[in-house]
Length: 192
Image (tube, rainbow, N blue to C red; front, side, top):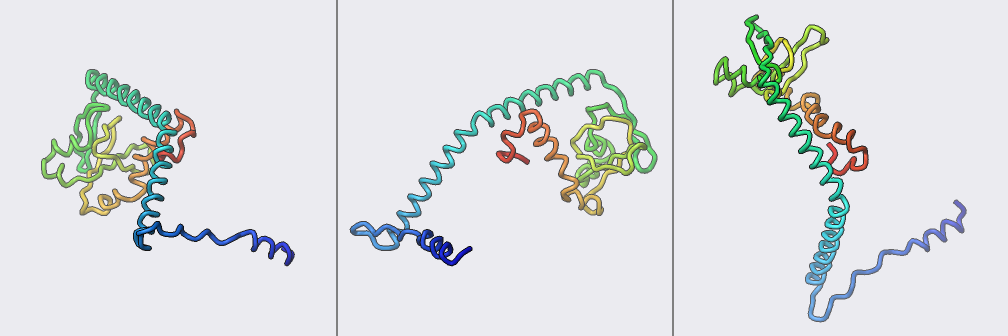
């Protein structure tokens, strides 16, 4: 940049205006407080306007959630009525019968012992065709014949339940599918 252009750009960037002079009878602290309150009121108006602008997006998202929730509830009722049995193999080789899309790992833990159910924080499901077992939420219904392991917090895998890899599916199940259906219009507004 040439010296003349630099000097011109410096002169065009004037310092910010000084704060308004205190009104008669106000000291500097009172004036500063009044300025902060005015800025907060302006920010509140801006926030309210942003919420009002995004209301149709949020209404559509709530409507979609309620429709998906109703469809899932109907699927659950149909699964309960069908009562399709699946076989769950525990680490000791014992096999337990469960109902497809109804029985959860937590249900199985309760059947074994109330104490086990209290201590269990995560399950691990394994299928022969999978390369490695996958973490499974205790309240997520089992979907197929599988091997199941239950972990308490005292186990290293139980402690890993808070790792991002274990909780990422929660985000994927709530955010990504909804955004795929709605499009990317609201990405960032309530996005996961």
